[in-house]
Length: 87
Image (tube, rainbow, N blue to C red; front, side, top):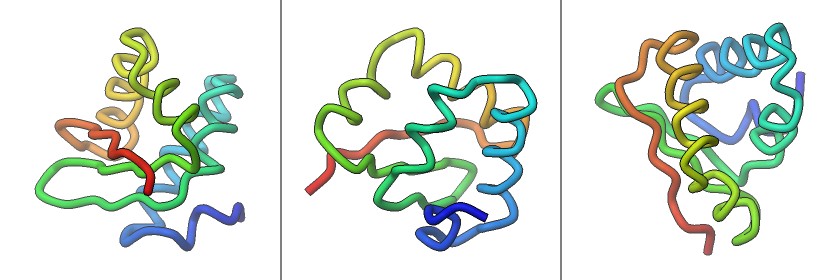
């Protein structure tokens, strides 16, 4: 179990997303998600706070955002992923 599993409100769904990324060999995205400060599932959305501003910018890249949304929709049945600025 990785450290970020305990940084949110739905560990089962978060673990399912990370496992899905691992199975699909999305290792760069998997590595970035393992380092997040926190995550939160609410009202069909997944909110992620990255560990740094550089990570935040990475998640905002169009192709990364689309990929993450598709993978999270499949693994967690969320409607949307939102990336929040780190403190």
